[in-house]
Image (cartoon, rainbow, N blue to C red):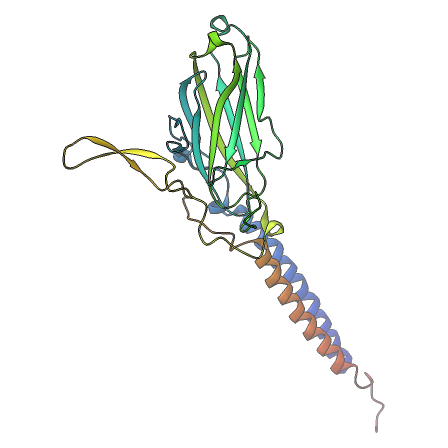
Length: 283
């Protein structure tokens, strides 16, 4: 009788173990397939602003997964600002459409730089941050992959932290005769979620968002004159998370369930192993 009961306990534990593993894998797949967590932008949200700022204070705010464009002149400094939250690894891509080669006198070198909310220049892990365009080139494409944004860091460190990030695009070397020629620029920012492996035990009290990162025109009700209204910078559409949800929660809960099942299984083995499985008659 005890042998049958012990076998039932073992079969129940194996079934519960398989169910727990299935729950973990299905939950991870569901999280990856959740439309709200997908990095693909909606049809109507892909188009971004059609202009760029000329300084940090006038940087044009954009959201990730948007494509921002701007028409400018060779030699202009173009600025955009986007939000990045903890656990994200942003990738900035820039494309510059150059004038016709007949109008240009030589080669040009273009560069894209990224600064955080404190205007500290952030290093690129990899990508083509600086590229030279030959005289007959039609376009030049640049990219910069930042380090993973951390939820917290030491004050003296230069780690990427949650907040606003500025993108600056400009030509750093060109013939003097080519300065002023019209160009068309495109900027897109995407992020890869790096998960709990990059989490730290801490969080910022507030994201590093500067007090002035974009300027919008607002009508003054008294005299009707247009005056610049300074906004408080860019922010994710779903708000700042500061990395409170990561895959650590999933594995912590799953580990607790499996530990509880192991305890039940061990208790069943202990009770079943206290006496012989078959007791002779008359004993």
